[in-house]
Length: 321
Image 1 (spheres, rainbow, N blue to C red):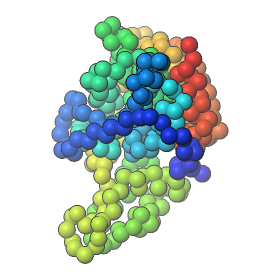
Image 2: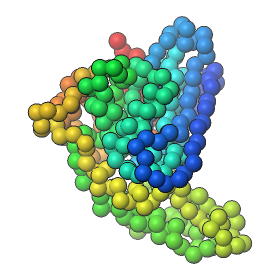
Image 3: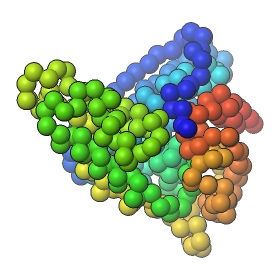
Image 4: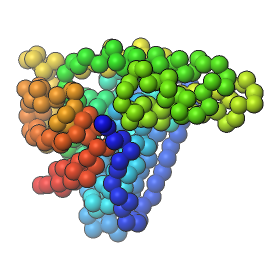
């Protein structure tokens, strides 16, 4: 069973500056959106002593930067001199709602974030959907000589650069979430009420709890106003129509003209994950020739199930010369 609520023990207090940027949720077709993010920054003296490139983290589908709060603090503690950023990808968390919901569009959002914040020598970490976004960013920069120093290291957590069959199960999740949105006033007052709606579509309570992190419960149930109804904060219509494209990958590793990013790449697989990404080592090596592979005794949510082991792999990889 997944244990999404299990994280590292609380780290010691550290000097840091955290900033959160939020944008409006107007739905539109946008080539680039301004991503919401949180940041942990080192003190000026630590930066002067050990100036290092930042760590930037990309969450998975239905996730947000909040899912990484505990690990961000641990990374910041164990990677002195490095800022740690956690982003909300478009249509997630506090970032704008916008079409298209494709890997190419999400990669452009991330590249815009890196550029507008002047970030270089970035260690880019992505989990699940965020892993495909991170790989797309690296590959799209591989032929851009003016930005060759943007990404220095790539960390891929449990998703391969290939087409995967996701659509049926994810579509069922979104349909159940839409059912919750459409329920009459007063039907969904608690997380337990919403959990009962999701239960027929997902047996694992940890995954249901994860999906419900996106649910806004009513303030009270005295009126029939929209603000007093339970509602998911993510744009379910956009996500549902995007699921087929999220199963894809923008590049084909079997084509001779494929892009290639030759920087250090760490691939972390969940040993019991249904995605079996180590079956795709040929694809990883074709796109990322410096790939090295590690396996943790965990399912798809490797960072949540084995946070200490995951953190050590990432810290050791980023710190290596």
